[in-house]
Image 1: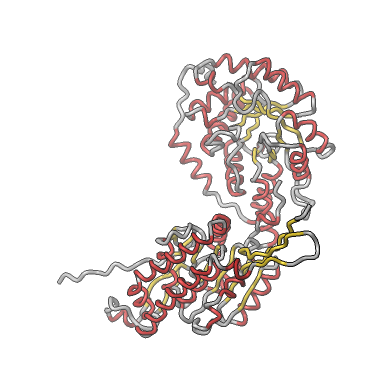
Image 2: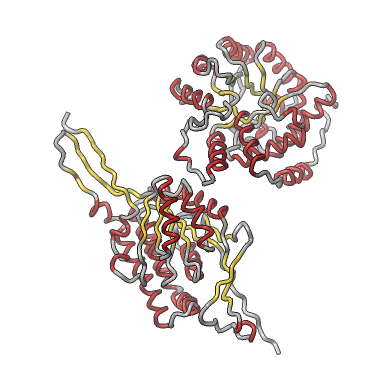
Length: 299
Length: 298
């Protein structure tokens, strides 16, 4: 009998454009609600560990923030048009791997139809935000009337490095929406996927890798939220925190750390991620700052 | 000690790299890390060597050297401020009474391609205006073409022109090509009267590297064993992270011992290292990772 063993993928963190393991070497088992077709021994069926995801530590977080900081300026100074094209490219790559992502999501216990829907919504969302890159300052910027001889105008500018905590519900859509809404405007991100279902978000790193997104703009690290929220949220080089998880205890912790250096922090209930507020330029504006310039004229 | 520089000075390059790797794996945590960081801070020659340097920039640099981080007044001052000769009077005035030394590069830094008379004038100018340390460059072209006597005499004459000021001799190891040449140049400089030997100007890549530094430290050790004289060491250029600084300190301690773990015997030539060390010190005391946005950029 010549039974072939399947070659399984090692899920790794995505930091600074490279796929790396946690510096600690630690992993945690990700369990699924349904079983991948190649898990067919009795032992695998009894204990369906889908994969071992990296259990990131504070040092992995530190690395990720360093890369995010390094990448942010260059990313923000690319033309809005180019950023839009790159985001659109992510959508193209994701479309290309639709079947792959759909199957991965079904392991998390989602029906095949719902999984396909989630992948399609993710792709559409990328296209939606890709279109907003060069419209943001037109819509939210303004020329302001002032009583002195000044040309006074306001434009949105990216906040900097944003820490993102994704929801358990629709884990792929959550990660994609965060990247699309927050990074499109010129921020770089350290994204922490759902703790229970991190796999699709980790695979999304591969899509980013092949989409001309500069290294370090998006960094994805899996792990136990209780362990990594603390070093990430307290990091002085993080400028914003986007929290879509629903734990009151972690909200309090994040708020406390955000106060340390006045990080902008938002808590939003993700639901299933299909409500209008997640497909809206106001979501982008949560992590933009309005900068107003006074320019003397008339002399 | 072999003094014929035309002979081979065999260096085990693989051995040097392996020893560096082994030393880099030392784990330094908690209190020892904190005291190591403070020691490294006290050894920094805070440097600005740009054509665009202005008195304003030098004054900023000096105030950082006096008070590296205002919220922590107990921190040591930096060892010295390193500037071009025309900036020496500015630095001397700004550092009055602080105990921070004023170092000046001289001898047609960074190329060293000027007549000896000009180099001597350059050195005297800096010393007369109050520099207590002189960083000179050797004539690498002469050294590489085998004119060792010329290089030796030049260093000796500059040393004389320095008077009481300390002389640091820059070998510019990035241009010396081999570790063998690094060792030869180190010994030659020490024989000729250097108080310190220094790796690089910072204008040539690669600047200071650990293998080169280790070879120089070993040359210092051998020189001390055969003559009894203690020569200082200054790696310069390319050392930007606190972790690197600690690795250098381990190397110094393992090669030369405790006597060299002092700012009189060991210096870092750097500009961005200061802030990284400060960030690590604050991280050790506050417990959270720091951002460069909260540290003055001087």
